[in-house]
Length: 165
Image (cartoon, rainbow, N blue to C red; front, top):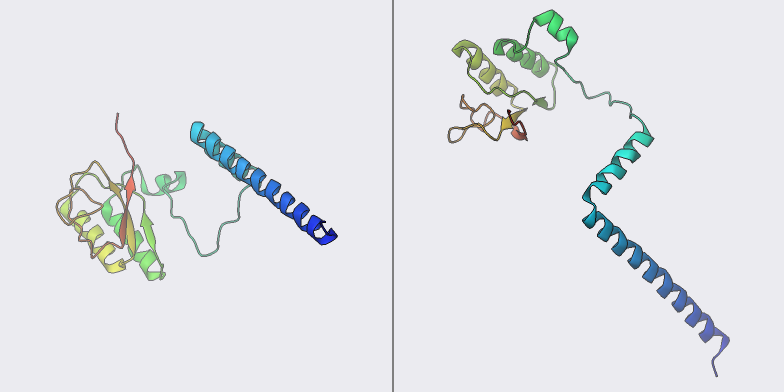
């Protein structure tokens, strides 16, 4: 004859089984839907980020952008590489922990400007550059497809997806 304790334990075990089965079914359905409709996950994340609203910018991050004010001050882009070198030296002087240079330098300019930029990157020692996957880099170079930059000088290099028409 079952005791009161045994029937309670059986009921709890049954409830646990139902909850575990329901969680498993929801996870399997979620994986199936994500697999069959891959954009749904991205749309849901986009909606959640928009619903959250903008986050405040951290105080320890500065973005130096090529914007309308910069174009009015320095003229039409692309600028001389020596100007970018001066900016890198100023950021280095401000003791930046890392500098991300999200600009593709796909063509050589004059030797003095190119050398000034390479020297500024070497002095900083913490520069990460964009790298074009379509550039034909010489062995041991990174970032500037035409101008060898030793990997010892760069802190890193990230891929940039640029497909000209």
